[in-house]
Image (cartoon, rainbow, N blue to C red; front, side, top):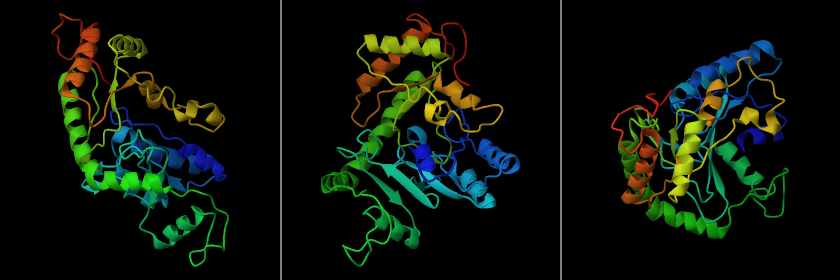
Length: 309
């Protein structure tokens, strides 16, 4: 969604590799990509769009510093991180703009489609209000001052979200933190569990583990399926591997960490209402599949190899 939005403006997306521990944009590779574009092309970087993947905020401390140094705007993709925070600042409050999605599977979901844009720039906010309603002027319902869209959130979804914001969202976030702690306790030393860096709180949009390789992931997923447990691969291919973007310029080394993770990641059931017994069953199935029912070796898989990066 983010990359195709860039293309629709006539700009060119430039991808940045990920940190294989957090799955988020790697600030070091971001700086490399900025310098590479400036030195090897005639194009000029304009903005950075970090995504808070699986509920964990990106490293906004380093990203905002880099963006300011290079004169770039930051558009924070907080679609998966509402309820999370970075060093005490809530997700959705970083950069020139931040966006979120209210799709039902997101941390703050409604019962259909929807989304929101956040900014503390009054001029930009007024422009966004025009754009969401066919470019309508603020002072008149029937005057239109620019081309826009019908992007208004419908009343039913707004009513649902208002209730969730007031009553359910804080309780759901507490339940998710408890579920994540139970997963971590049951899977530590068996697979690479999600990392939450100091000063960060994750919204746990997904609970995503890393397996040793694609074959082990397939074995684990099959074992979960046999036990009636759903799982999902988010995402089986990086953005640079999508047919839409294959012809875009890319660095000589490609994006090896993104490809490495996409072959090994697996997302497990995660929601505020998951029961402790369900988490325990999931952990047991994964552990028995990797270590064997009688194995007590902590931190190794069935081949004696340690999981993780």
